[in-house]
Image (cartoon, rainbow, N blue to C red; front, top):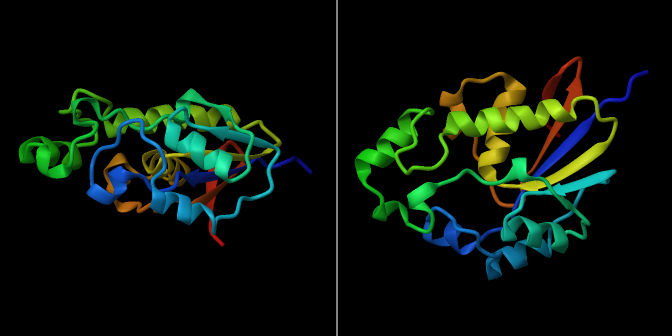
Length: 181
């Protein structure tokens, strides 16, 4: 029987950007996030990975994971919008970005480009017999979910990922499957 790669994606704990509804910079976990982490558990895995940002590294450490940094797990590049609240961004730019996955009015990365990046990373894991946990960002979890389901990029905003949510993907026959429960 062939081994099936199992991937557990964990979104990082809350940050101040969550609280003020802002596009994040490389920021630490907030006090609220530290409280969330006291109640969190992690799956048993063979390999732990984390995105390079401080909030993911802090989350992984608080979960007791000795995680290697994986650059492909980095957050969506928000360009000029990083650190700004939604109210500080032009309505037309925000509408274009939310309505068109190929749009990047902030000068950063488009949703389409994020999905391609995450899909490339997922493909690289397909032959892994390991159970992998990856601490990353809600945007990366959304992108991975779309890749697993073969859903269009237009569905990106329909996937809600809360802080410390665990999403499991199992690799089988050259594709990833979303596993609930």
